[in-house]
Length: 482
Image (cartoon, rainbow, N blue to C red):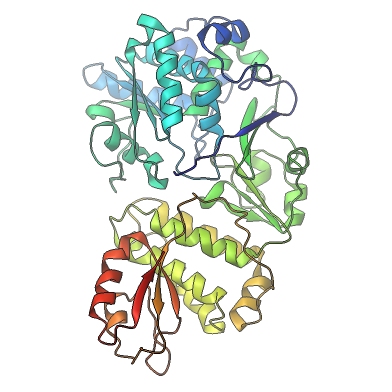
């Protein structure tokens, strides 16, 4: 992403993953060992027991038990020729998440420790780290070089910085030299992953947590956090600050620590996450059980409070358009469904009337459960959650009065995320209708056969069709505006 930000760092209580970073910007190999100590060796059975006794779960979104992944890869490898691979998913294609970036920029050796520990237990020949940022790639490569011969088993690969790159099959495809796009197939990487081998695929924080647990032991690891969910977690608050907190910490306390409150509501879990009302945000704790009671999950750890002075509906419309542009472009719900969903949100926000709300509901139903990956479902759920938490704002926009607030960009997007726009020159437009034939997901006609809007956002995937519409307009009434 252009102008990718550098995260600020903070902690509640004694830091583990972020230990030592209060006095050093980055822990090189020597500083890393001084802070964390040497990494104890673990037999395969001992590492599996450690993962079980600490209830270590993936920190990339799904929260899948790490011990089950280890078992699955071990079982698949034994059924074949014993070979396997380990992959570190260091891709953060969502601008609201920076925790993995923080680890790889500031404490890369902790991540490598965990990955190499897992590789030794599995007998894996190679550890591959997939990243998307140039500065992160430099940091990880430097860490590998600092390890000398021990780093020869680690390969670092930079992939395109897109939302879908972090999806499991997309990550594997990109690391294997193909396009970093979801395959659309229900294939477990534990059965067939990197180079066709059984592959242990987890995100950056998961491996860092494994390295911490290996040093502390299960009992000491469980001294922080909840008995049922031990340890700490990394959060990205307001798209800018990475905070390490024990599980069970009050969400309101963390927001206050970062100089914020719940505002109009809090988005938890990022752009595939759920909105919490201000009351729910004040009551919620940072644990699976607490968030589940509000139909939310922590996901990749993004926490986004919405300030009082921005327009909720407009913020959601911006993100919905960006998510449509970030699709893999491989199935109907992504290619047509998500742009249509984003346009429906924009039409509602622009005063499309009550019919616009019904049209939006229909668009959400049309993409759910039909995508080749989870991107259409996640985007539709994000919009549906916003409708549930901000019903008055969306209704006011739909009937034309709006909320009177500007869109301040409180939900972070890349600096280059503003889409091109198709602009109608009303002094020339004759209502021929060719534009809607070429761009049915962008242009809608009013009752008189003219475009219903004078300015329409054009998703990147539809830019070629927009150019055709400009060229074919008999009245020369269309242009594309940056």
